[in-house]
Length: 131
Length: 131
Length: 131
Image (cartoon, rainbow over all chains, first blue to last red; front, side):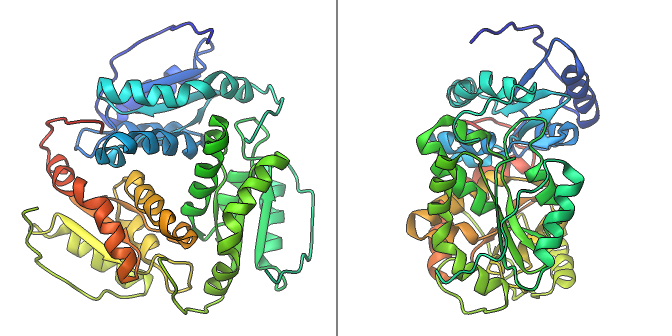
């Protein structure tokens, strides 16, 4: 993948600031992919899915399903990750779980689709395979 | 399966016309199943899931999950198909991906449940198995 | 699991009473888990997912995905179960299918995560694994 990491931030745990921060990042011209880690569990401060859902214009539930299906192969706890994925302002946003091990496993799941997904979102409509 | 194909249409790519066309088809007395193909990807003109969600009175997420899980066995790109499924006006609507190969694979996934599903929707409440 | 069953009720099939009953059960101090069985199919009286969605403050889609994925290993009819899961008033609510066989299979899927999930919801934020 030919990627440039243009920012790396610790975002708020609180719903409203987190929502605003995600919307602002997604609207930046130089950002076409946001990967969040953590905040997807069942705890009172796990607001990442709710904040992300609020900014998404289109959902891509299959991405989160695939992440959880892989996670479930390692631990039943994978089913309680509530991450969502989708598109906001032409930017693909994907919630990953928080533990370093789960992030590595999840990133392996999504890495094959990132380049093609970003091309599609930007209007490169060459079809390939089964989307 | 004992089916009669009563219509076969190229629908609009645009959200509002597509929504209206789906609602109209679903409301027809002689239609109890609508299968869409295509428009489920990440491109700007992929409006099928949004149009379908707008007309659904009840979602049946497991149908789309099963389609994607099968698709993922063939290609990681299966995870970016955003299809939804559910019920509108007593009609089962299922979004399939667009490529002929993906349509064939997906249809094999859903074909065992179509007859029983349509019976259930119409109020034939004989229970069988695990719904 | 160290559990006490504080109530066991036959709830209404109708959407509004069912919604109220779920909300009332979830708000009780002595209830931190509600497991429903049945009403998740495609029939006109299958209102459990809609009632549950109305009371959920946070969804936990991975729980229902895992239940259906297991169910699909036994029968394609598993894909038409429309159950949802999530949190209302600090209580975890999980919809299971209705047949005794499907309930047993589904409960085996969720039993490993129940204790830890309830701890997390109550604010016990010790992280373990991949949520």
